[in-house]
Image (cartoon, rainbow, N blue to C red; front, top):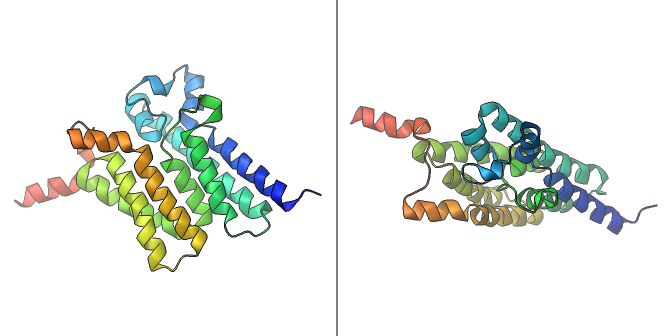
Length: 211
């Protein structure tokens, strides 16, 4: 019989290895392209959309979200009811996505895998996360800034809903980690060189229309 400690370690290792299966890099191999050689050099959905098109980006997002779902589901199913373990597995999967062992430790920024993990570990937060992301994106057109602020919203949401300690710690850790993985976006924002999706800035067009 496997000891609880060994089971926990195996689940966290599995979560990390699942996270290391980068959607854009796996699909890129089928296409003969390394997405890290194009656009921003990031292996995430946004760069996939900009450089490879919506079908490639959709496949990337489905893989990245799916591995977050599976990592947390395995922790819930086989983790013996430990309340903290699904969040630890989510963190391990996100780390795997950002630092994938199968791809030279150069991956994406973690947002898609986070959404997948939250769908299982904290489903109601996904609506808050995506709502905040869409609000900032349609106001500013900046994807990176939208992701950072959407992650930050998880902290007050956890506090307002009296979240248990593991969930609150996870929310705070995710907020900080997303800010870290998007540090290049923040630097470009300060320099005024960050790419912007003008087409999605519906609030700017609306207010200009009323002026």
